Image (cartoon, rainbow, N blue to C red; front, side, top):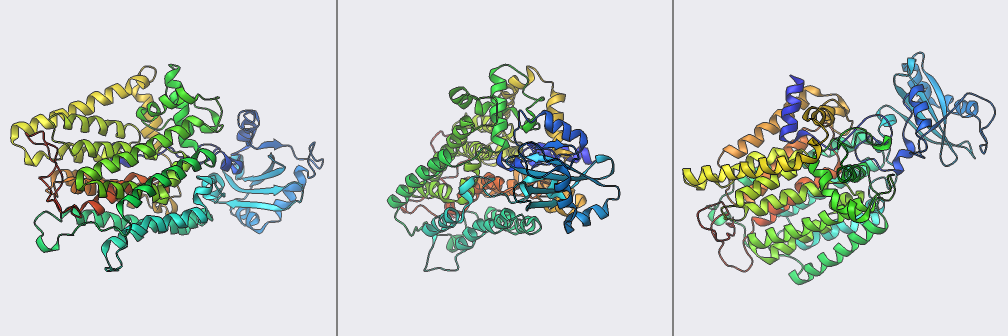
Length: 596
């Protein structure tokens, strides 16, 4: 039953980015810098760490018990073990595991790592980092923070200075400022923006390694946004006096456009000069080179990113042009191809938001949406981590843009983009029922069947083409094992389900996400792009609520959809009445959206 639910959840978006709970380089979103705190797993793993030190210079090197310091070191293996043995935290954890033992390892530069293992070396239960010159204890970890280096709050592990307060706080102010209405201080939009920024509180605790505070604090804003999106679906075109007026900005639109240009330059400059590539972007570059070199796309990844092959093939294909332009040295270096890929999809997301806003309510909304993206700190967080999460956001936005046209070929384009999004990261597969059913209610039976068939054709044909590089060398069974099975059989402390051990409630959340995705596709709802954006945002948020591994890089999945729904519900500031909804119809005239 668990496997069946896992497969169903993955097929509808409950699969996430590659995560692991053990060895160096396997944790979701781990940067190369944070691998300095990675653990040795056992005596066997320790010897493996020594053998792989050439490929990963930050891997710990085992040192036999001795009172003689190794060459170039002041302390000995027995000396650092004695220091670690005196720590109360280590004494407490060892008392819980009778028969536990410790081992000493060299860490660069001039550090020691002491790892404690349970009887037989099956589990690492404690880890201490000691400075060789002073003998000072720098770090001590127990519990899940032994295996999960990303739970240790290493400074700059994600996005480097993008998370610094002198960058983050000004961006929070810039994000909210243009949308403030001092005449209506209790506007719902003010609360919406505050909730979107409130993820920063959870992130602050995460950055200080307070995981038992950071994890639960992420759920109130997720639940609020889910409820808000569902509420917007009920607000149709016949609300009369309750209909919002034009979107009024505190900053004139031309100034806001200049702000977009300035912030884009800032984001790109920061990415090029001061950002890091986490394992997610590294995996994309590895897969791209494998495609180019006609090698198997799945299996046998480098030891410092062993499980980087848990995405769909479209993810790796997206990196191919940039890998060809910028190349790859074969090691986890600066990875310029990953930087270029992240920048390209960030720019693409900005452009798509502008086009969507312009089609919905005119250029003012387009500029406002583009500005919201470039000023929202969590999109910078994803950009400067050089992850692939903006790729997902851009493909979903492209699918919504295709949905805004009445062309007879639009359903096919929508299906193709849905396939690419779902085969980049599996979460957008949850949107397939919504995207397939969009606008079908407004059609007669024959055009309805034709539109659905075109969507299905576009989806299947694109999926088949995307799988060609993978199926050239790998079987479907291998791909299934490396992606869905691997993802469904791992744990994570970054959700309430994994942190508190709530597998039963996690199954309930997964089933609820599947039910919501199907229900919103079948039940009557607001028919325009605002309704589609709100429905897609609700499904993605519900999907994230059911994930055992949740991280802040996933916020850009739903953020642009939330902003489309929140700002798109306002009428065109030009005062021109909107046309009919954007559902497919016999006419090929481009449509604008209904105001609320």
